[in-house]
Image 1 (cartoon, helix red, strand yellow):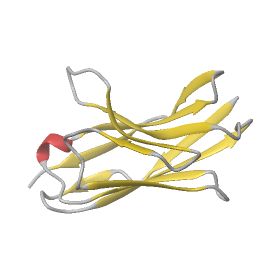
Image 2: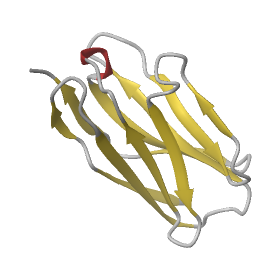
Image 3: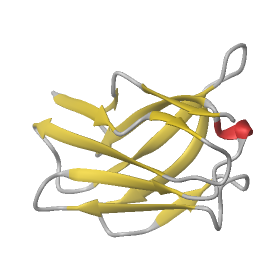
Length: 116
């Protein structure tokens, strides 16, 4: 079983920045994928960015060039640096962990609000 704890959400003005963190603990497989999905009110939960244990990244078209995902293997932690935030980025951001081919785990969610 894998536990995920998220932090770093908050309120920011358009053009501002936030950095999300997600720390994983438990039975973490060597081969895994971590990242974030987000869900706005009335919408589906959609991919934001993922990163594999090998360092390969995948981004939603709407965030490419503005967001950067990275990971610290020693801390079992993934980060999402979010720059040039726009109101459309407002959503609950959920940390995601695919533990090999066994299971998918979700964090508790952290609110990101981009508003003047």
